[in-house]
Image 1 (cartoon, helix red, strand yellow):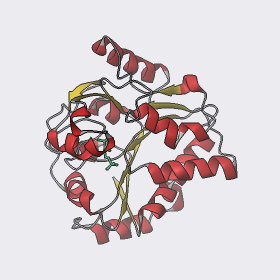
Image 2 (image 1 turned 180 degrees about the vertical axis):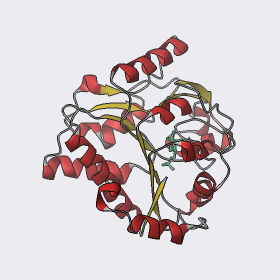
Image 3 (image 1 turned 45 degrees about the vertical axis):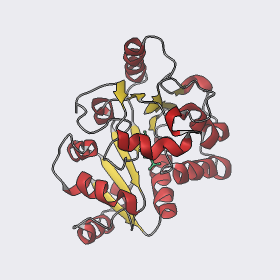
Image 4 (image 1 turned 135 degrees about the vertical axis):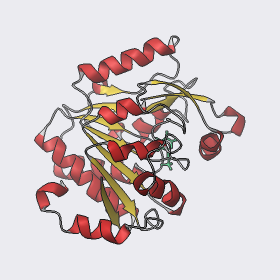
Length: 260
Ligand code: GLP
């Protein structure tokens, strides 16, 4: 796990975007796993800038989003479909048929989850998965006590998650109780992960993820067992890491080819 601590979220987002852009330039048909939430917004802004100003081409890129709320259609203002088109897809040249987001209105949810996994496999697997972390250590919507080997499935949202995400809904009771999410197994099968976490609120789950035991109580801790994870943090999110100084020195002394 490479832990990369930057002075602020903007600098971290720029570095993460550079890593992703290098991958896309080397492999134009890259398969990206994408996340929602406030955390990846800076990364998405930077990808749009690279596309507009430096001609970064997404025409052969395929994307799979981590999750979607059950019961919300693509036009619902709080759906992750709406989020992704508003913050990223509207400005990039990814063909519509290359974009995959779980369908919150699927009638047969288990069949839909199975076909989502098939689509990931048919696309050649995820080359790079973007991740945020929930305040309770979740990744995607894999809440504490999720199986480490799970694949795309429907989960029941923890009350902490519902509280954190309720502000995106008109009234708290409109916040769904369930979501379709890639499983932890799906995430672990991606070739590389880019985890981003910013702000004091994330300091504790970040420290548990990086320095704590691998436990289903903190789903993100499983990433310690993934062979290629980069964690981009700002100073606040890194503030509970005992080894922050060590992490900094380790990263600074890496050769350039290992940093991208
Ligand atoms: C939601 C998403 C997660 C995301 C988390 C953190 O629960 N399903 O994928 O990582 O929110 O959100 P934020 O980035 O807004 O803190």
